[in-house]
Length: 229
Image (cartoon, rainbow, N blue to C red; front, side, top):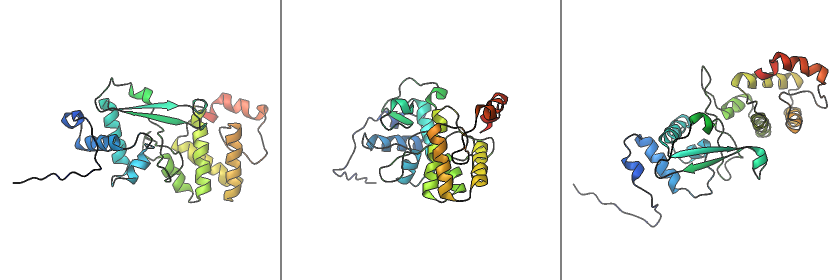
């Protein structure tokens, strides 16, 4: 048997360490190799990695989780007050050889940058699993609306909720959708309503120009209802 390897000018030099790591699956080794070949300023994300591979989000998330567990990937969350964009951002540190493994809880994989230049705005990778069927934030929003402007406003609302440490669960999203539908079926009005809540860092949505008084909200917040949304 004759094997010929025909190299081109477009190639990547990397360590062989991960190829020899028997604790990694072939899928994880391939994804790490691909990420090591990408430019330093490439916007890493599940959505972006899906765009350049045939695998779906579930497969990409599984490989990323394996790389984090093996110490080849670290993800650091930066809050809006620490970033130039004023939005939540994540720093990917990718290693050719494993480093000390961080506590998975501290890596907070709920939201990772979902950006490829020209593909979509800074989005989110949601790896939080519900008790039933797993759905990403983008899936939840897409199932609610096909309007791109409304979808973007909803994503920004979700980012704001994360920034104030009140992340939305799948059930909480349904409550928000029901409130929006009750306020108006007009997408432009819904967008304005969402922007109003984002501007004031409100945990829920209200009719335009209607700011709840403390007398209205404080008893409800003390009862803990607001935590459900």
